[in-house]
Length: 90
Image (cartoon, rainbow, N blue to C red):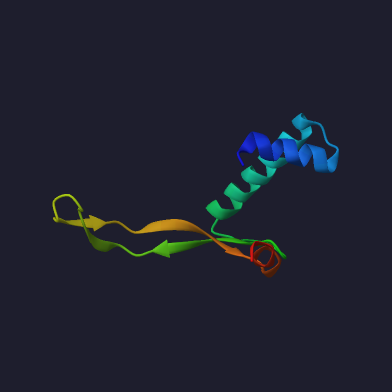
């Protein structure tokens, strides 16, 4: 499912116009981005938790040449599914 399909589905399930559903989805994405940028987490009970984690700097290998390369530290986004979401999938 892509963003347009998600907006269409939200619109049908909530009886919002597609424009309003797009605004709601965009607001959710923007708020999530701002929260994660501050290194806070978002917990949606039953759905899951968005958080950030710090990956340490490490030495890797170039797969083509085999030469060692330095991989810098990096902040990554993590998602841990909630029990309800995991139950739907299984």
